[in-house]
Image 1: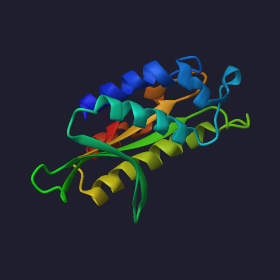
Image 2 (image 1 turned 90 degrees about the vertical axis):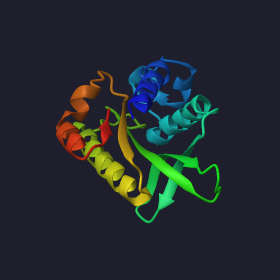
Image 3 (image 1 turned 180 degrees about the vertical axis):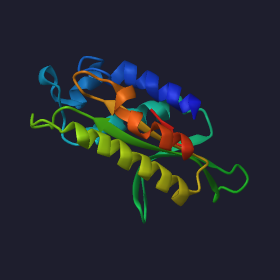
Image 4 (image 1 turned 90 degrees about the horizontal axis):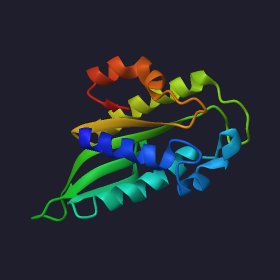
Length: 171
């Protein structure tokens, strides 16, 4: 999980942190000068991370699947590995849920701060439940702060104790 955290952190710093972080910004911002993210910004972040994670893990036995559907819903990413002897068997190693924190909607309306906190709480619930549903060893909630004054540590502080108790990576 630490390796995934380090990788996702580097991807965030390189491609997602600000409206001018990289060429990928055009896929993330409706109006980058005003910090208005695109509609369905979580899906936009997921698309960028999916490509980057698959590229990084290209030569490993791990596979990344996005939007894996279960009775409970769709987890953003699942890392799994096919059994080298019996190709019908897969080991599910980790669930990664994504949440985007923002100041504005794609139309420029203010996005309430309490909704960002609620998203973190719901994301932690999802990571826990999907981990159980997929019989994974590991789970994480990875938050992407697209606010004008990003403060990811403060944004997740209200759930850090619970994440530690439930052994869910939270960043």
